[in-house]
Structure formats: structure tokens, C-alpha cells
Figure 1 (spheres, protein in one colour):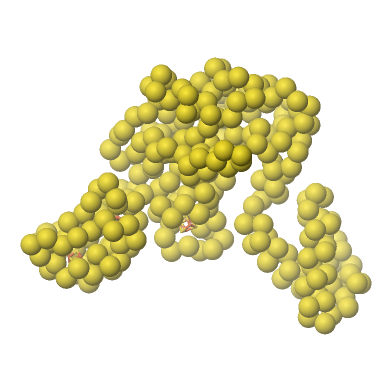
Figure 2 (spheres, rainbow, N blue to C red; figure 1 turned 90 degrees about the vertical axis):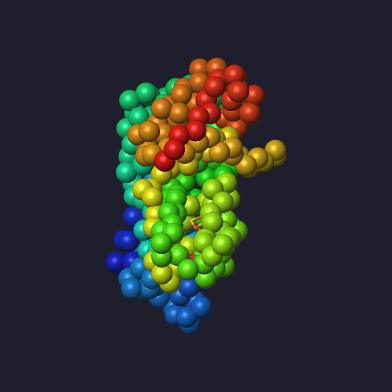
Length: 283
Ligand code: SF4
Ligand code: SF4
Ligand code: SF4
């Protein structure tokens, strides 16, 4: 397969560890179109779909997933966000970049990367040695916060205007969590079941449902691997500044008190009660 000079130049900008794979995918795409040369236009088209397949991860995020030498400066904290910007998702409730930046500033201040790295005894840092924080901008949880060390999910609370509710029940069908029923011609909300999205508000023909300010639900202790587990819901917080006290306490306790090979989820399970880390706050 021939490559146009500009396309070849552009390929060199792709991170080296996925460059071979990117070349292969672009050439496959060209062949599927019956072409014998990769033009700049074709490269951009194929690169965009390749990025989508890689879930929109930045080169820094992709790099963080590769094995790395255990030496000062190695990134140990992986912060993933759902891809609401790339997909122009209509369900987004909050700005995930602000949350991410707050966590990054805290990590820098508390030297989290380096302290996590020093826990690892082997010469190579693998993906499972790293600490993963996953942020989703709505309860759909596309970034998979349920299997992260720390998960953060934006949510809202529905509020009903009883004066305008007709009890039509349209919101009952719209709720993905079976959290609404109608009683005496009024919609009733089950707070335990409600995940806090916008579906009922959008469905109500009377405009009877409004939404609270956005809060953050924080989860801890999820993981995949040989013994997978879903993270526990720790509490609901007003915003990321409010949640940072818990996150900082949990991560610092893990760094200071866990054994070197212990994953955060295992530390969390054996220590959560004794550490008195769980807290509930009204968002
Ligand atoms: S988690 Fe919610 S806001 Fe984020 S991409 Fe998924 S549906 Fe959209
Ligand atoms: S859809 Fe609106 S008007 Fe109908 S029951 Fe629900 S809240 Fe009331
Ligand atoms: S906010 Fe979402 S989960 Fe909660 S009651 Fe409304 S539709 Fe159901």
C-alpha cells in the first residue's frame, strides 16, 4: 500500500506504541474501499474512527495503560472520563474536566503518583498496579465507575410540582429505574431506586418535574480481574471539592496502610469499617 507524503507525516504524530496498529487499520480501510494509496483525507477519516474505537482516549491515557519501567515520574494515577464531549451526549449533567482538574491538582499536591509508585516492588509497572479513578457525567456510567478504584457519577434529584401534576403516569414509563409510581393521581418518587437522571423531567408533558443541583455520587473498591467486584456507593456529595475529603482520606490510607501487593479494592473491603471512611451527605 502506497502512502501519500502528508499522510505518512501525519502517521508519525500517532504515539509510537499504537502507530503500527494505526497503520494496519488505515490500510485495511483503504483496501475495503478498493484504494491502493492512503491519502491525507483517507488517513484523517480512518484515524477518527480508530480514535473512536479506542474510546476517545488521549495518547497520555493510552500510554498509561502500557507497561512502564518502575522509576520516578511514572504515572500511577489513571483518571478516565466518559466520552460525552466526543459523542455530544445529551444526558451530560456536569463538566467532567473540572472534576478531573481538581483531582489532578490534589494528586500533585499530595505527591500521589510517586507514593503509589514506591509501593510497587517489581521493575515494571503494569496496568493493575495503577490507581484508576473513573468519572461519568450522568448515572449511565459509560466510563465504568463501578469497576474502578474510585468512581464518580454525576446525578440530580427530581422535584415534583404537585399543583400541576395530573397523575398521567407518563413519567412512570420513562423512568429506567422503576422509581416512580402514581398514587392518588400524584407521581411518587422512590429515592432509594432513583439514580438521578433527566428522563422523567424530559418526559413530563406538564413540566411538573424540575431537577435539583447536580451532585456527585462516589463509589469505592471496584475492580476486574480474577476476583471482580462492583464498587460500593460511599456517599453523595455536593461537588468535587466536597468529595475530595473522602477521596483523599481513602487514597492516603491505602498508600500508608496497605501491603505492597494489595489492590485498593481488597484494602477497601478489609478496612472500610475500621477506617470510618463511609459518609453520607445530602447533595
Ligand atoms: S455517562 Fe452519561 S453523560 Fe457520559 S457519555 Fe454516558 S450517557 Fe453521556
Ligand atoms: S408525567 Fe408529569 S404530570 Fe404525569 S404523572 Fe408524571 S409528573 Fe405527573
Ligand atoms: S431522575 Fe431518572 S431515575 Fe430518578 S425518577 Fe426520574 S427518571 Fe427515574
